[in-house]
Length: 394
Ligand code: AMP
Picture (cartoon, rainbow, N blue to C red):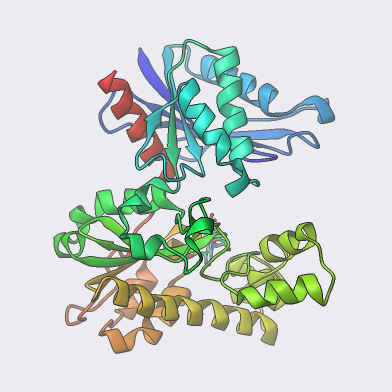
């Protein structure tokens, strides 16, 4: 009988899920998918480990089918797909662990109370992440649950990298640089030794380039600096997020354009980035395929900012031995990897164009001073690993 670890990533209108065989050290994937359109047009799609569809479903009770119904459905789905299994734990992706958590943790009432206090720091994600925990607690109180944070990996950063130059009274209220995408960086740090032992021990900048994009400088597998700070909007331009802008721009929007906080939030999270600049799409594939000058400019701005941050992160780690590309764009777009590397030629990075086009893991030439890699990330597996490890400790 398989001991299944269920991994949940709950958002406002969707829940991404994966199930792993927790009885095996390598945690083979059993199935994955998502339930989306919660409260509007709920539908789900589940695929097996090879990517073949196992079940797709939609529900007509639109307005009432929400997180609770979706999680109950997932537990049923596991039962119907894997009669021989036993669900042993649920691992959750929780966006914010604040300064409380520098690693994954078993969830109890005390942990939940701390996590609730962080909701104002991540209002778009934290409440939905925690709602999923509450629902599992209600419908399966017997199940151990584990919280895995996007911020925890960055708690190794020196104080300087985590600080804004704001008065201490503001910093003391939690206004500091937390960093995000930590589960992705932690996964890359865990597999890097199998690709490049020198990079794993040395100074590596990882570029997580997807709908959300950020970069992290690691030294000996530990985070020393990152482009995302207080929220997941700082740093690089993203699919629909603007990345860093002068804070004076926000004051101008408030004072001169009379935008309120909600309108500014909508602008910087949902209408900027690749979508806002191109006026066409947030999807890199669409922009790369377009011959519109605005698409070309959006791509140029994206790669220019990545290259600038590369210089900044290389300075933070006092040198650079390797660059790793990961996530949707980083793993799949030779074009973007090449453009970034061309801008990074001054660092001694020389790309092997054939290896890059062929989708090899190592995409730099043997003489390149900086080794360059394209490595798929796996945040869900990282959550399953933490969940399995904490279960074993109990
Ligand atoms: P993620 O958030 O990691 O799923 O990444 C989503 C982003 O990856 C979107 O902007 C996609 O357009 C982009 N992406 C996926 N496949 C490719 C590809 N083959 N070439 C360029 N971009 C891609």
